[in-house]
Length: 270
Image (cartoon, rainbow, N blue to C red; front, side, top):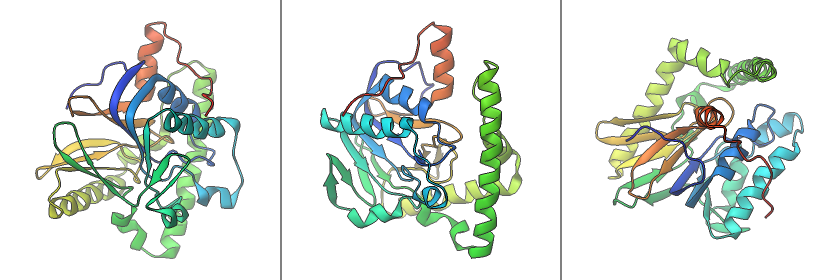
């Protein structure tokens, strides 16, 4: 594990992205487009909740920037990048298409990735481990609407900071980090995932789902959560030597601005 360096124009062996939530107003599409246009990889994993079908059922929202993300990913797949889509709970309908390929994008329920240094890494969204899924419909309903309100506040602060020329900051991530019950849930989730991976005789895991980017060892298992593009704007990467890193793209943009490098923001045609 190493500290992340500026990644403009870098070629990686593997990139993991999850919880993009296209179709949801909280999606930070412009940050993701900058990331996609600044990196290349042999393989890109889309680790669930890429399209937020839940949100679109409530209110249809699909701006051009969300279209541009789809076009960019299809363009990369067409030019030789292997793109593997592992659906999550917000795009669970796509799990019915598992073991098929559409538009050069492969679909699986889960996948075992082997790093260049021989480590076997389980890749899955992670909703199957979430104990909150078992707390009953009423509590789940309250939790979903509470999160939606928090993300509404997050969007207003984001707009104000952007108008003022301030760097990105997530109210939602800050509040979750300070709420004891939220962090207890995160740690419980991480431990359950790591225990299952150990039982499968694998070396590690990359998942998403809980919107909490993390990379740490748990009882000999490398636990990686690639975060999201609603709150944290993060991704996991594998370097050519097999080492894994967690990239926080809003911090990379700060580095780019300090070096007078303008992130590329135009769509790439498929």
